[in-house]
Image (tube, rainbow, N blue to C red):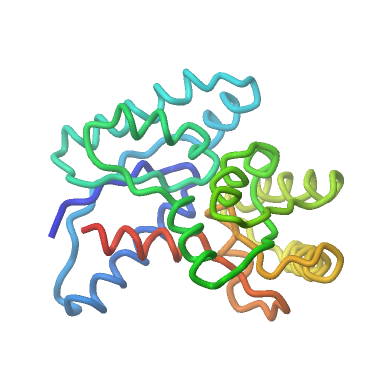
Length: 228
């Protein structure tokens, strides 16, 4: 089994979720006494947000690449980001990385194609919803990606940044996001919704949503389990 490296901390709650799901997935595949070798290099989500807000993409690439190089120095054989927003510079990271990287975007797109979806909603940080790295990847596979209207988009980002990134899961926010998902299904005709922020599974777990959800963390961790 290969040693896995995770660029963690972007945010902390999702990093814990990645670790737990990978441990559980390997246990299901190999037996409960088998624990994969995982090294985590932890960064700050707020550093990432600041670089993104000021369009400092070269700095963001360098920040993330330094973390990947730390992981390579720890002798990992496969590595991954644990945040979706940083995937905006994934092609540059992949080109410069000293170890193979597994993309959350590719894992999610593959699942959408396999399910036969042609129109999908996207929830995530403002940066993820405004940029085109999700949309471009899915468009190449013949799938339209729809984001919420402006006011809703800002609300989604605010709740992620001020609550979920800090590990706060409020019932009021659960209900608001449930309403947003249902409205996108009815109004925008989306066939499924991408939980395009690695903190969103914390919010949607156990919720009765009328539209199928593509949990990026679940899909990405499955791909990582396959890779190691």
